[in-house]
Length: 166
Image: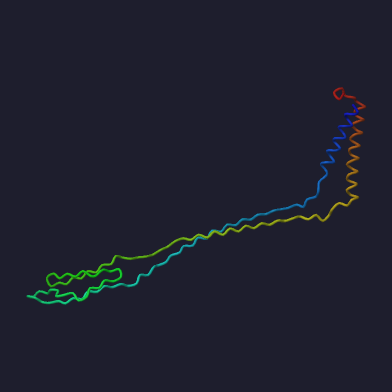
């Protein structure tokens, strides 16, 4: 029975030693800030179309009191205009020159996305480290506590001798 108790205490002691062995690590705080800025801009423009003209020159003649076209001297179309249409009806001159309406107005949206990521890392430095003597005192205190617990357990075992522990 004593062997089992010694093995139990020894294993408990080894576990406590393994748990307490670790190095001090500085505390790292990491703050991330992500800012996304979306800028939408509405653009518009007007396209200018140069002026355009067409011309028509002809000779007129009078026959029996009625006006007639004698001959066409010049019929010149423009860039987008065709040559004019000319009609003579009952001494009435009609010249038609048509241009479809041209309105060029453009607008569009442009979108700019600006992504700003800001990362701040703060490392906490320890300034007050324990001295060697303070560490020895802490370990001696832990060892004394284990010995005290062992002695209390041994005293209780000898005094009461429980049946379930045999």
